Picture 1 (cartoon, rainbow, N blue to C red):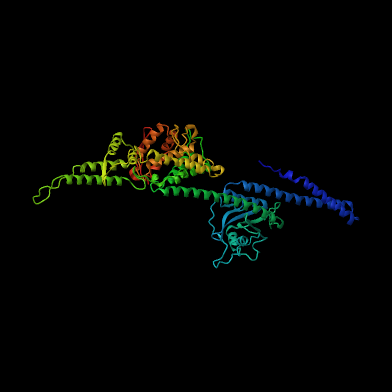
Picture 2 (picture 1 turned 90 degrees about the horizontal axis):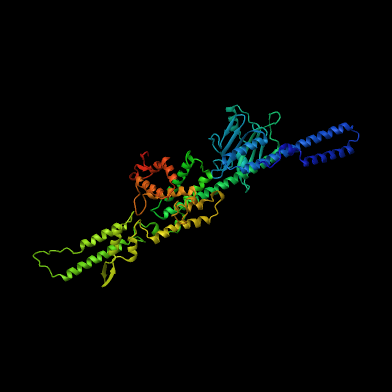
Length: 590
């Protein structure tokens, strides 16, 4: 809503009337003293003329100030960089009634002025920003010999920081306008008056140049020089534009810095464990793809949902940071490839114990047996427990690998083996220590209950770390979404056991992406990546148990996202799958 009065109201401001009264009083006082013999009607006419001209001038200046304030408000409220640049040129042209305008942005690294916006009303030119791309070469600020380029008027303005007002560029001295002449010759245009203004940021550094061309008389339309008394106001406009541009660039720079920092954290988490390398990256990409599919939905529950650019950025950042708490997780748990692995795989200790027991048995056997008769050769006897020891180590090797399940029968067998002892230096030791028995009896995966609790603690750490960060308003839900990626709709998830209504859609999307990536990942230490068909069967089971959002899973399948996702899986894992009784074909289109 416009908080300023319109121009008609501005022209009748009491301050203007007071100024007019002062002018009239001054004229009357002067006339009374110096023009006593002049007829009264002449004096009155003179007073009226002076008052009229002063009023018109003051109203014109007031209108200019009014326009400057409105332009400043408009520039400061613009959020899109391209629209901001276009608006700077458009408002400057309107303010000065110029026919054309060019905005250059200074590139400090290349020491050049890049064309950002080019507009010309007479020629119908609208380049840069949301218009046609500009292919013109940048204007160098320095020559090849490293000397400053003062021949180009825009470069000179950027180097000196001073405004330049030229009545006719064809008659101007000290600058090279051959490019302008060539442009005029090719288009039939006639460049004449030019006003070049530097754009200074809050540190008084020149960040760009605004070049206005061919000011027009507002009544006749003829090309005229830019009035000197308006240069200061155009400088003010340029200053407001520079501030708005600098603010937007600073905000964008901070956003880019935050985004890069978040990605670096994600890369660091992946790098911490070679077995999860790429997990964060893949989950972030898949979550974003799911969000885009929700946006594209035209029917069903998701038809009315549309994530804007800020919300998509928030979801993407939550996905990048969902595992940030794993920074605190011990490496030997993240990388635990077998059940007995700590800093090393303790199956090797058991191998040595078995070998010690085997050798001990052989020694006892040889010690208690009489010397065999020899008839030219020795007839070796097989050790009585050789095959038994080999069967034990083969069994332990197998269950040490982990996997999807360990039967009760095998668990009982491990406990029986724990009762076997071996002798060393006359002392009896158990073949399996209590901690080793606990680890070998893990029914799914490689982690014990205590170890899994430590691993699951990474979610609480993620929440604690993210809630301690001062996220801006448009990213305030990052800790919420990231901290819910292990929650389940049936309330059995962790860390808070939230139910259906308490889990927002972005958190559900992140949970789905995390599960799907974990099932199909080919770089896990204790299992190969599942076939796509097997992963989808598991997803159906999770939907049936209300672990995951069934409608969301339906969307990613029916939209073709899962088929596209499959193209990035290793060839071994790509196969056709069923969902809700319907077969989906996965063809290798890469």
